[in-house]
Image (cartoon, rainbow, N blue to C red; front, side):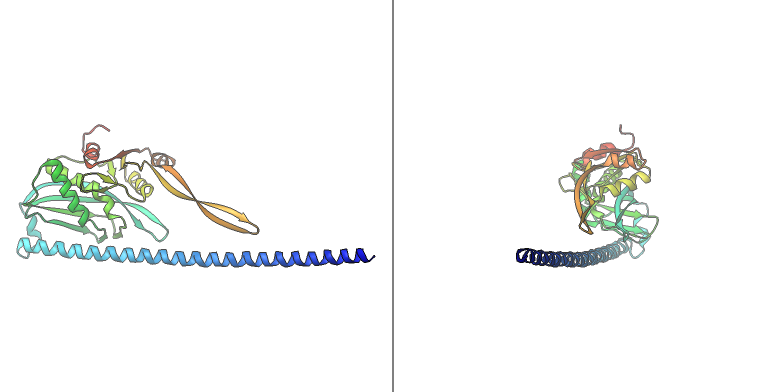
Length: 299
């Protein structure tokens, strides 16, 4: 009897201990869940603050760029901004710029038109937008002009390059440098008097050596280009497939844990899954890209 009583007591103590441990485990899981939620909230707030800082930075750069534009135009025309273009155009071209904007729910591709003009001047690089578009193209345009000079042999020392970016609405673009390759192609076509194919679009930065640099948000830009009527979309070398992070749900006891799993997505397949028949081609240089972009080129 005594042994049975001891065994019963031990079993009861074991049950109580297990229950206490289970309770502590559940409490710990709840606390971990609360902590994770708090950290995610802080991360979300930090991301939102970063987005706002980026937008304010682009607005500031845009304002400074436009002030510089009107200042230089006024200086060149003796105070009349429209005078800089009167009878002085040496060449022009139009190209689509594919970029992204922040929507508050992520990023969305956007297609803008860029009208490039070559005017008699003193080697200046000017950027203007219509309507107000938060896009920083000043540095990309300077590199594009340098690359175009190297590829064409054209001397820009007595020529002003004016890039006017036109959109359907006011928009804050967060990836202006990715339009560099397109702008370089537009400058080259303005020099050569050739037209660019409106159904061929490109995303990619332009480097001083004429190479096309990699960019972010390729899928968003590809979708925007397809929706705008692109039949051929050029991407930087190595970005025909892009890395994305897929959300995976895992159940841990009564809780669901989210983790991110990396996977590669083929850009052309992605567009096809959205109902678009667009060829995606990787390019490594502005020279190579121009062969696809110029009107009449075999695609």
